[in-house]
Image 1 (cartoon, rainbow, N blue to C red):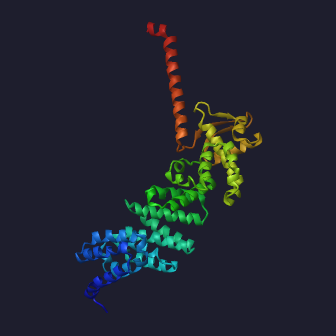
Image 2 (cartoon, rainbow, N blue to C red):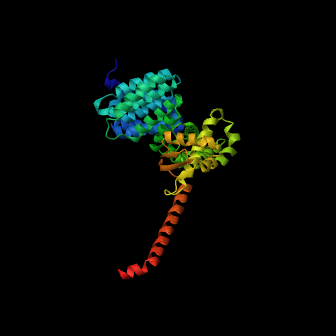
Length: 387
């Protein structure tokens, strides 16, 4: 068996062989690696390795670089970055079962009291591989274990949070849980710089988020997604209309929603849920109608709601009850008088158009206050003088 000294002596030979097999554009990196390794500059060497592994041209060499080179000093470098190198290596495996075995071993390697952040990161990425081999239940168990450990941390690197929410989103996508996917996917995007994603990845994420927002049974506030640049990736694609549909739904515009019927019919997942989407646009129309009214004038007649939502009068009460049960509004229904009084509206993240509408209402309110002040001043001059 080779001693540690023998292995050290073999490193220059190993790097020399890898250098000769590497594409010309990255071959020079091996000289830098050898120099830093000889000087035991582990931090600088790790940074060079991370950049090397990011390069797509390094893919055919990653496994050997990791096992023959990195493996000889893996305990000396930042363990979180070691996991990063391991992830880049496992991504090159054609056999996902082999990738799972590799990630499981890596997780155990970094499972020490001093490197629990790296251990959690490796666990999360192990769960991702389990999803890839259709072990959905196993992935959930691993994610729950990782989540329990994360809850104990005071702070954590954004790369770990991003991975956690990303894999959770993948899990809920596999379970066809639109609302949970939507929440976790937005949290994932909050942890990263969108430019870190390829354009293809951005478009896939935007498409999935759009479908989740449309079909999520508890999602009636799209502001956060509408204001996120991820949606702009759909512009100029065959699914640009999905972006428009979200804005239409958020505005509660039934007329514009109906104009998009032909496009909706092209997507089986939306076509089969047309009845649900129709109910959702009616609820959004009700919410928008309430939102556009001043707080002092939020008693709506059933007929007014029927007009806004384009529903038969006999279906209005059910619509209002649905909105109340979903927690979108609070208030009371006067069945005899056929009207509803809204006392509270679910807080919303507003689009620029909605903010402008609120600004106009504030200006009108300010004008009304000034007029009232002027009237009081003119009407009460004698009273003020007597005082």
